[in-house]
Figure 1 (tube, rainbow, N blue to C red):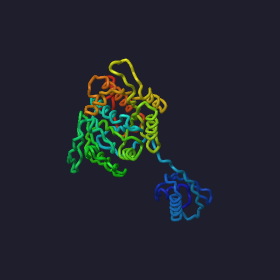
Figure 2: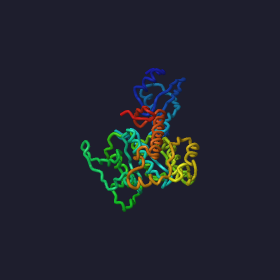
Figure 3: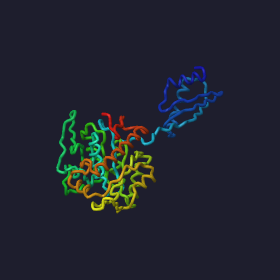
Figure 4: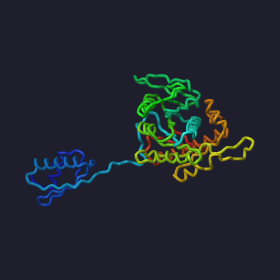
Length: 369
């Protein structure tokens, strides 16, 4: 075949080489210069491409050419805040609720937000991922319940327990109340995956994941298993809790994780005695989580005061937000509205785990079902 740029390109196109693209080709006497784009930067891959081109030329072109290749490495796209995990059919948004420190009331906040969202008309589920200290079943008065097995398309699936309009799955359903869960990370992760993928959640607008304290194995397992839409951090105002909450935010902001933090909730913000309804006593410090939200450029979703009724309601399995038009139910309604508002912004600016259409009506947001 006659040596020409057109002929050479034609020959190479008829003999495609894996993982490369010819950008440019020039002939200068007996010298052949080729610019090649590839996504594989390894020397082995480059050498393989070079040998393939030499073979194609020797088999189709009579002239001997001095081949010189300039490789351009394509960077694989890694969109900001990319969603991790595998989507579950029917679940539109997965919200991880976390805290760096234990004992800040994360499960209390999770249960009350779930009920408030359900009251707003959303379909809501809770995955209690606190393997070593599950408390959601107690808060929903279903500690003695056991999920049934249902047959879905020839496969046996767990049916979540429903209470107050919220679907719940927890490791607490499968252990005795006085039984300690003494599992290593892989075993705990396997149990979580069963509750996620071997369950029939149905159609959910929100799946709230109640994470354990800290930043460890369980958190990574959830992020790898589920397409987490966003996260919420719960903290008290005290410096010790805020230091751990800061670590929780940092975890979600890690480049390898990149899950948007939708906001911070400050629990146990202040105490107001019944006999002094106008007074506020800042037992654990004032505005700590609010200041943290400013420092970290994260939305402050709201504050929850110290109330005996909130503690009692949780202990008796009747979350405080069920008390319609009470101060505490209005507090959680405001927090939930702020959460949904941040979710709307997040889904406009970032790739969603699933297309979500949200409209705003009468001052609060609603999902189009």
